[in-house]
Amino acid sequence: MRLIIIVLSAIFCNIVCGAPAIPLKPRGLPTKPSEDPFYIAPEGFESKSPGDVLKHREMNNSFGIVVIPEKIKSVHQFLVRSEDSFGEPIAAVTTIFEPYNADPTKLLSYQAAEDAANIDCSPSYAMQLGADADTILTAQIEQLLAQAGLNEGWYVVIPDHQGPKSTFVVGESAGHIVLDSIRATLRSGNITGIHEDAKVTLWGYSGGSFASGWAAQMHPTYASELKIVGAAYGGIVANISQVAEKNFGGPFTGFVMAAINGLANEYPKLDNLINEIGYKDKLDKFRKATQMCLIEELPYYAFDQVSEYVDGDKQYLLSLPIVKNITEKNTMIGSKYLPTIPLYFYQGKGDEIIPASGTDELHNDFCERGVDIDYHEDLLSEHIIQAVTGAGGAFNWMRDRLNGKPHTQGCNKEITASNAITPEGLSGLGDIFSGAILTLFQKPIGPYEDVL
Image 1 (tube, helix red, strand yellow):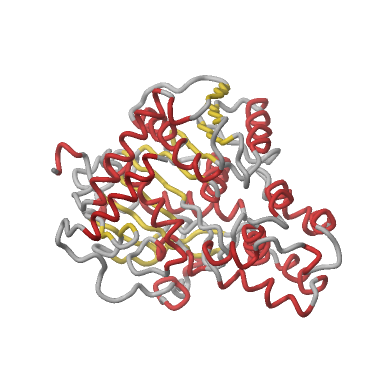
Image 2: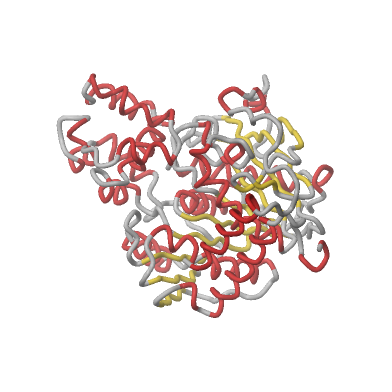
């Protein structure tokens, strides 16, 4: 918690203390994806290959943390040819960050938690200065974690992993988009300077864990040519039915409403089912989630019960054949897709949103099938705290993978009072927060000894 206060204090001081004297926001406001023609696929894009770049634009001086601009060497956005969960062509936007003094052999793919069924919550928009305030707690704040990679000299790519239909918790689609955004990034050497054979790691927490996990699982069959050397994810959405059952009717019902609408954006059968069984006078409220981002949807749906929308409880809803089929298809545990890269899991035992038992089950399932996993469980953290306290160990582990250090063979589970106080956690958190503070004071982003 003290580290969070330090970072927030740096933001406050930057704003009110007059240091440094540069504008705190860009001229004008960014265009929302729903109104931006850049997000529209060009005619004939279906004939392109997955990972092909359909459009490109440079986005320098547009990105920042809340109101503070980031000093990044270059930022590019690509519209990338990908596939939905049915194998049909789609086009998704991805954002590539090049730090000063970049190492063109290393790439971090960071999957931000969008947690909404609305394209106007996409990271490519939400990370920009001037984006709607209800995006701040997701992509903008998470940039502080992604920037740790930039300060190591790594390139960072942050995809809109929910795609043009905003398909929240749709696994195969998320996996395709993440992997195709990596393909596009590695093919962009003439624009970004990155090497085509760069090593790659995946990272994500909560909603970002879902996209990272599915990308790791689909990597061997969908994009085996990519040199992905490891994936770290925490607060893991391993079983969406379990998460829905835990949260529907409580303060985090908004997550569930966004997830159901996100699934309905992909699966017409689910969309039709909602129209059939939903109370007609409540359908507009139910669909309102497609017009909201995280900060707005949580209070709007807090403590709503399933019985307010359909004639039944949450067990009834989750047991319907269409719902059960779709949720099972998008559950990591027992999936036909199995990762072959080493993994790093981190989870708060007291997570009040995503049950730790789901991460335990995923760990056991993967271990029984031969996946190498370092699992770090934190006894004291809940969901939000673990996003911070678990990040240091994850970052340190990814750095080892990109630097070629051998990973631990087999499965290892370590239980500690806090993931922040392990040697690896302390080391990684120190790097994350020192880099974040330099960023908040608008220092150039890249390896410190070379850019200061």
